[in-house]
Image: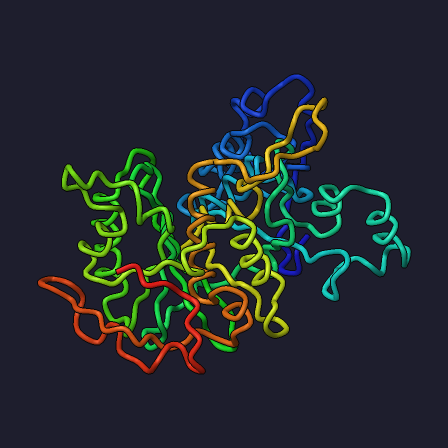
Amino acid sequence: MGQDGIRIEAITEFAGLGENSIETLMKGREYSGGWLNEADTHAPGALEDLEQRVGRYPMANLLIDPNAKRMRFVIGDLNAPSIDSWVYQTFIKKTTPDRQFFRQASGRSAEAENRFNLEADYYDRIVRNQDEHFVRRMVDNEFGYSRSGKPVYDSFSRARHVSRSPIEWIPKLTLNIGIDISMNSLNPAAAFGQAQAPGRIAVFDELYLGHGVGAARFAEALHQRILERYRAARAIRLWLDPAAAYGADREGGQMTAMEQIAATCGLPVLLPANGSNELGMRLDAVKTELRGYLEPETHLLICSVGCPLILEGMEGKYRYKKRPESASTEFEEQPEKTHPWSDLQDAVQYLVLGIRGRTAGIRAAADREDDGRHSPRGDRPPKGWGSGSRAGRGGFDPHKVGR
């Protein structure tokens, strides 16, 4: 009975599914709310099945006010699953205003909630005796990577590297766009970011149109994205895949992907790291940012709202493919080409290398002002792009201009 004297009747039903599905079990049932225990172990569609049966009890004619809004909820609990789980797809990749996801802190962090109920070395023992995938999920409460491969960026942490709110881009700072494209590529991609104080690179937008898109169509989409979202940018740098400079049929009058981007966007294009496309250097550049090389707590920061595919790649879709049991090593030596994740990760690599340059660039404290003079044409973005002081202070210029 409540303090107001009103008696409340609560009925709770417990059900083990066994061989049944929730859809079968719920048919004809009417509830106020439901609870999915170990939610990730239920089949895909379980949440939807349960959502259809709640908010239906009690019947409207039993209420004092038949028009009153009835309670309606579904709750689930679980340990962090892998990124292949329906939970990741539902609550991380395809979010809606009606569903919320709550994440507890790592058992090893200062914010851990349940340490007082456990032995002092409880999590330490797990860390010592379990493999990395288990520790990531069961101790650090991070989504685990797919068992079909090993994530390229195993140091990536959603708690550390993902912004909790949308990242605002800053018009007075140089807008950098890393672009993965070549003349024969059918999966071009772009990543947008800035070096924001105190030296942190923030990635806040991505562009991927799907398979089968050529250089000309992608260039038009990129130009439109710049006009719609970044017209106020004071300076813009386009950092292209070095392969974009090759592959055109010159005798047939064909332009390279680099020339196509430059002509359509009306902007100079650049090749990061003196045009080197060495994979190891590209991966090291991103790993350097993830671990916060420059200053404490200035690691790479990614916007969850603007970069869902980039985040999926970071969390495991960009991976080293697992080799057969008979192979001499467990994983392939180079990341698997999985579209769109590998394409967008390549774009992030060009973005980071573009901002930091080679070794000296990676050690730089922040992005430098652009000294180029962009020349907008026709309906191109307005004057002001490319203004700023000299980029290579001290005489160091780590990049090669592609146009």
